[in-house]
Amino acid sequence: MSEIEDYEHAYSEANFWQKLKRFAKAAGKEVVEKALLLYYAGQEEDAPAWAKATIVASLGYFIAPLDAIVDLTPAIGYADDLGVLALALAAVATYINDDVRDKAARKITHWFGSEEPTDTALNETSPDADNSGGEAGKEAS
Image 1 (cartoon, helix red, strand yellow):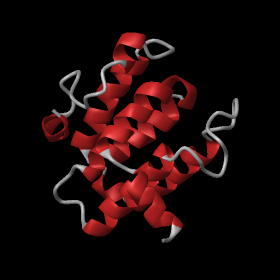
Image 2 (spheres, rainbow, N blue to C red):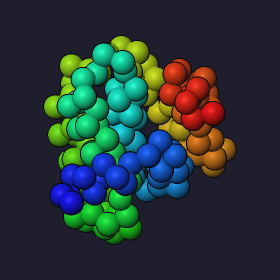
Image 3 (cartoon, rainbow, N blue to C red):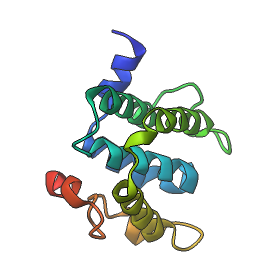
């Protein structure tokens, strides 16, 4: 099995929201924003299979507990995740439409409205906990 397939297997919607819930503060706004943009782009019906595969693999890398730089490493632990997410975003940029941006922005504002996400916001793991999940929220419910 290739590394890409390993990361694809690491991805699930539940694992994605669990990772964000537990590590949003440590990962930071920039990493979380890119992850959310990819997540919501992956929910778009018009995204082709190759784009969805790219998204799933990159989010799987983000979720995977062991990666190039261990996420628990202070200050630099999410640098590799940021790089992978940024490359995936560049690859699927055509499918980052206004609806995707709006959903991600609402979630980011909800979590990072102040300098740090609130514990209450991070305890809401459903993608539509703030009514920004659209169809994805219906699937997670």
